[in-house]
Image (cartoon, helix red, strand yellow):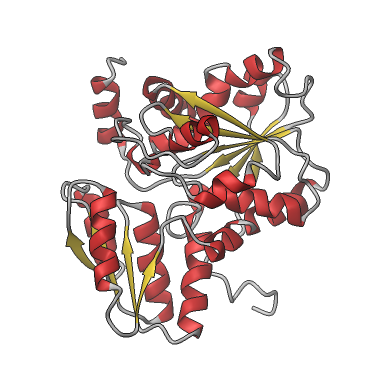
Length: 324
């Protein structure tokens, strides 16, 4: 392993040209497949980097509050580091996620109804000596880890794409991608940042010009469910071009089904939000409004993945939204 990869917990993911999505958009669409990361989502990039850094500084026990992907990434990192981990989840978290976390060797605690309440408990635990709280999205080390995604894009594509599409939850991926674009000299590439209605804390903050806390998360895309977005995500919108858009839950779930049929990959609704930018015609509309260049050189969609989905869950979501 003399190629420098041994030190990371994330893998360099494939960049695939999507025939189906390219046909729909009328320009080349590439998929950055973060769904094939060892812990099932892009989260391992930032969280793996964070955990390695705090381990170097003498951390003896990792604690993380997460209803899914961040917790799985933290548990995976802890196992790789040989450290114990405690993951605090909201009550009513999916049994598959609990099982997966326990399979990684983590202790699971259930606290509170929503992530924000589980987070309070995690912070209390982290006061113990040698324990370190792993923030799911809001930390510069996490953004630094996520920036590796753009370095891979640069290596694979050479020249910049016309636009980058990603989903926003807490804003960690957005902040990391923005930092990565600046690092590789691609700060002119517009980022289309997509949220689902009912989890649109970034969109609300951009409109208000300051951080906004949503009263509640009402979207089915639970993994986008941060009531307040990271301040760093708002900050990066001042440095790179960010086009913030909101799609309906039904569009995100419909995109999950269509993507499964088109590419034979099953991702969660949080990821479906980004894919919906193409499936629902949103990018075409942004071009028509002059908010994105026309024609677009190529588009990269970050397929962020996600663990909280299986065929039964997809069916339940479609039923809930009245989709066949």
